[in-house]
Image 1: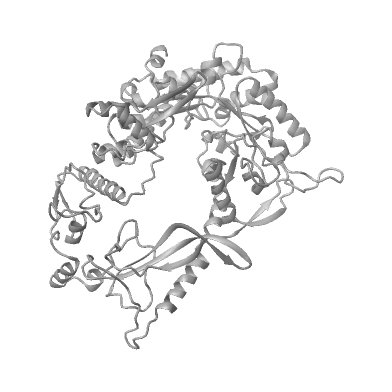
Image 2: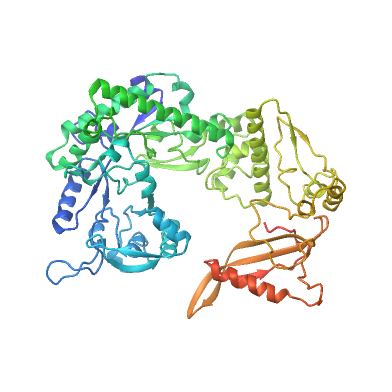
Length: 640
């Protein structure tokens, strides 16, 4: 293990690094427990939490068993809900609206706030179906299963998402998906999962089990460093040595845990669950100049995580034969040393120790940032980007200052190629520039085609239906042509392609393509079909209008809110713009007049009033519909 650690291939969690081999604390990252619906149950959980926290563990607590605000208790009293308790405890609650605002500093009773707490909500498939269908949702008391109140599921979901935007939380745990994929021993022993730990990366059973004994789940975490995957992947003992190490850590906890942690000790003995996590995935991709969102990155993802899963399963069975299966597995005749093996572990601290590799499996948030530690604040620069800049003689303070000014993004650096920009694109970079979006789409198209061509074999030609308006608007008609917008199939193509490009319609306008289609006998249904830009058309015209004259029809949801009135209440909703145009070649276009051919009367208002009512009545969050009457030029057909 010494060489593995010194090479930064693997890093134990901070409790192991801090407390391993000592008597001052325990080597466990966090614990999961739940309270009973009684004062004694709450007090018992508090007492346990004091001991768990004192020995260095984080705590995730499930409070969904408790009755909600206003329910009866012994005598003539009424409950005040769980919020007064969770000011000092982590929790889940039935009083969902108040709970969601727990970390929000404004609004409500300040005495019923807990700004520093981490909280989560449990979401079921049934609830999400109610959200999808805009149905009502019953809030049910866990005490007597009675309906306490009824709300609109979609309103609750919007409030959850709004809280996440405003405060970063709550975490969301999709419970049915979790239980559908729980370990085999859990399934055979009918052990359900109700929650996860603080960071939602490991889900274990808590509360009373099939033997009527209460469990406090134990998270024993560590992570491999994927940045060095190609250095350790052929080491056949690498995963085995790490899991043996974690098994020894668990044994150390079992031997040292005091009686006050009896429920946690019992859980560790029954399950021997570990969480082998991973960090440095984006670092690995950048070391190979592979964009995070590329098909190649997806292939690496599948290859690496399949390898980790297979190795973890093999080692668990090998250790079961060598040391014995864990109690749960043994009871149901499974040869497994560990109930739980892998986890998406948070690695904020240990990733710094591991050479500032990127924490977790997510994408870089910035290519330069301030790292705050107990010893001070330090500027951290992406080492792979720094290497690329050095190769281009651009590794200087001026360039890094411009990257910092642009929130850690490199998309403004003209000397980088599109591929290099994609490789170092950050998660927080909002791609709002239409040109950039088109080029990203163009690169992705070619990347997908080339990957598929490899699978087929003996393919070296890519045929595209590019037409001349695409070429003109992309600025490729001549050296002096200005760029109106880069079509993904022209201006959005990468600098280097492995496939030879063939475009038989490149020098024909759309009306000429339609004439050609008629000459070769294509049906009118194909010839006069609407263009299909981007991800698709949001609205189709289905009324009796002359569809041969309509070039394109769609709706645009604008990032603009306006005040409106619905019923007796004020609304603050989004604007939806409708766009219907007529054109012959796509180079110019006019707003479609909606004229009745027989009576020569405008049916414009009747039609749009209908469409507007449908959108506002069915599109939650939209309170205004407008119609775009602008021709091309000066506008383009699309909104972007």
